[in-house]
Length: 372
Picture (cartoon, rainbow, N blue to C red):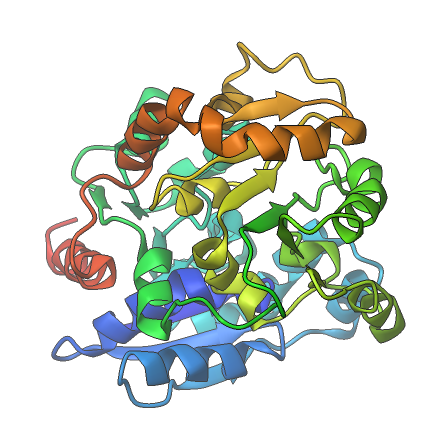
């Protein structure tokens, strides 16, 4: 059985999919090839393979035609991904199955890839409608972290009984293997606030909150701050821009516009309080219930909006001048949200098995070996 794992976007996707590839490769008669677009991907794959005690991965760079390269440079990323699949049609069509952690692979049939079974393991666990787009129904088999996503996808007709499996969170397993513990990030030991905003301009609180936040944290000695936005926010920024943000770090402030720690869940483990807007990483943070605070930078009427269900895990503020007061009260107010957080984590990830990646690999192989 020859299986290709396709990383068609940024290297952070490795932390959602590489462990599954490792466990598939450990099964008898299975050969795995990892295809990638981001040149940083092999380094991240090597790091994860070492953590799992696995041999180095077999990798291949996805080829890009001149037109595809032009689309990528112009940041037409949707069309770019379509073209990447088309450019690599012959190479990918020879596999028995293709696995991806984003739903772009659902377009494989349209781009001429007919032979392989298409397998999807979503890399987000959030509440927005984007997690449930109709093209997911094109996949032959889907791995889901927990019952929340299962319920939503069944209700929308995106998955069918017998063609999906629940695994728990492969990313959380990967984070444990990599080793998570408090590092000496700051000179003084204080509660750590993690600010983890989304990258989408329509969703993010970064533009409104980051400057007042850095000023407020620099002027107090109660908290340390890690400002680590979703890695996509600065993925295509130049070195000078990234260094400019890193340069705004201080004795009790760490600004990270993109590092290994920003993608491997290290900061989620280190933090005492989560501050964010629309990132699904809050669900990973709730592996250990702790105070959360949400920033409503766009005046959203959120209370009855299912896309903001996670904003019921902590207080919500609208203005930067409310931040430090809300942080000062967060620990005392956590009792109002703790039970809700525990229930939300269970819904997102179910009963986390010892190895979600192994559970997923065995489910994939049962599907591929079964009648179709």
